[in-house]
Length: 326
Image 1: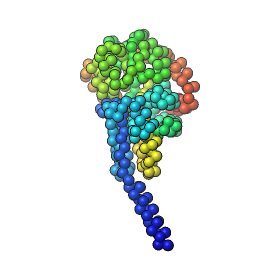
Image 2: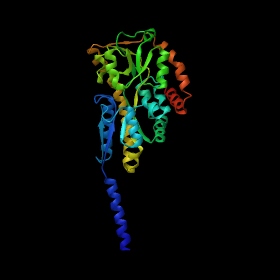
Image 3: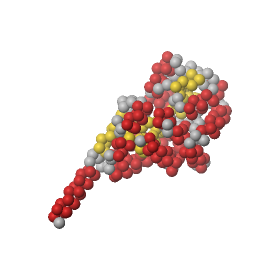
Image 4: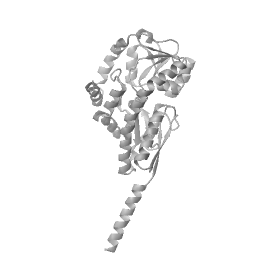
């Protein structure tokens, strides 16, 4: 009897030790440490620390310190990186997660509020859950900002002005089809090479969010922004399944909760920073205008949307969820 009591006590002690265990997790992202991705991941880290009474410390490494998006994804899959915030367009390109093309369907989502609502709905969770087949646990989304058009030599004012512009895109089929429909010459290029490519004239333009124009100092190399708002740019908060498997259930629950809360906060933050970033760019000599025939641009890309709805069931689900918001 005494032996049974002693064994039970030992088990309780081990259980208590397991629950008290502390973890330090390294999370990387490929944007500047001044970027919304940094702010969003730091917010997520703070929420995790609070929910675990400081037992879990999430260290955030920006500026590609742990690698670019491709390297981060590869590291997650083999377990050499604990966690990351990766731009969603990279997921179809690097790990074949085609469903995430839903997040860059041109002109489908019209506002930060609309996208936040859909990403917090069941279809947003289904997208995160789909990553488990890639050995990755998805926890939430951090928004980098609605995408616009930054050009080097001239202001793009009409659809015709896009013609022939050597434009950097993320080289995924969806973006290539979208921008070729608009009329530019697409150039696939690593994010870290954009500044020098604009500076030297290797490219004429880039489709990008205003937050990146500011934090990557691209306004020094190109002075013309056209507000097109063609799609948004969610990053996905992810943990390697190898790291996830060694975390206690209460820590997992805390991180899932933190991911949902960080998502909501990120969309509020991204929406609020647009006006301030616009003012900063104007103060630094950037001309900011609207496309005169934006409806014509939408019409050019509509066949691309229709084609992509059949690429994955989750893309159609996402589209339907957005439509239901209106």
